[in-house]
Length: 295
Length: 202
View 1 (cartoon, rainbow over the protein chains, first blue to last red):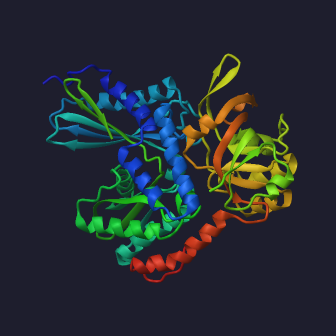
View 2 (cartoon, helix red, strand yellow):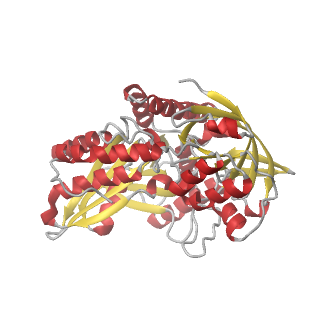
View 3 (cartoon, chains in turn red, cyan):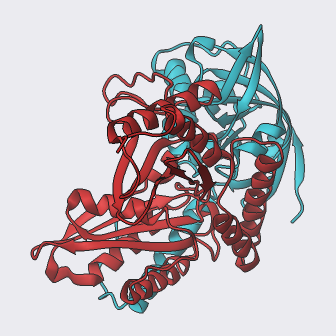
């Protein structure tokens, strides 16, 4: 079987398009959640903030502008279909090139830089970037690419901890609540609180990141985790931290949990914080070159 | 909620009339700066080439495009203020700055300086950069352009906001008040989650 049927530049073009789309079009589930939040918010200041957020979304839609100036670190979650003729190395290279082209051609501020020299090439990419997570789906005949421009106000409020088995679920719950309580207005709430449970020290962070990419309104398919999501969502909103940390009933739009089995001696938890501008854009690419955009 | 539109620059009377919880908009001139600008100004001892007396400072690193001699806006948004905290008392004392526009607030020493020099902190809605960019009518001038995107930007704004008075010149901070209320709420939240009554986080 030919490895690649379609045009070599297709994945690169799609990656560029995804970055720009994600920066401009907020997913409908996030928008609907923000509208519900405005209705439910009891603080007048909080409502003013949510109204301003909705007005901002409207301005970005009608004037085709970027929603937030923080164009973030580019994160791609790639699912390769088992029946998709794949050249993984080409996909990896194309995602980086696409992110670079989006940054330089739009142009918007590149936020990626060297961790010691702090030199910023204004490309959004560099050593080890973009962040790419790979997954595989045996049944699919397409390539699925989910793009997340992850802003720093929220990412900086993320945290991870290795608890002991004896500390139990109680410690995990407390860690989530305390992390949100300590972050105040920094992560531009109300957004999505992504929680990772289980796995290893590195994997639990990936799970938390994946949790923020789920549509608002979705629940973990496992009833035990779905219930925990509900419970934590209610707890976080009971804190009263509110929109932009200035007080109110809505501190988060949703708490999402992704999980994995872990070691007998471990009890890892991670929180990945997402802002109200919970941006994501998805593309499905078929071998014949057909592309479908979504969220 | 009523929104007062303030003309920039501000005098002391205007600042003293603002209290925590008030919502305002600003029309006039606003100066944008952030980390590197302030390090250049205070740590590396370069005097600001422009008089900042009475003006508000916006914590921003804008995306701009230079077209000929003009700077055109692409997207201008506001960043987290806490990183710029240590420079704030100096801006108020040495330059007579009357307001800081940012997100997430500043610390106690800035709040004390605001009381002493009659200044306030105005919280903008973080992430709402599209709206902010539209409200910024023009990039009038860029000082220290070699520091771009962390230069000094002279913006002309029309009804920039809504801005929430989150720290006032009377020593009140809405951030501190909400933080305290969240702390008081924690034991009740723990109890509901079945968490043993442990010590509160630091």
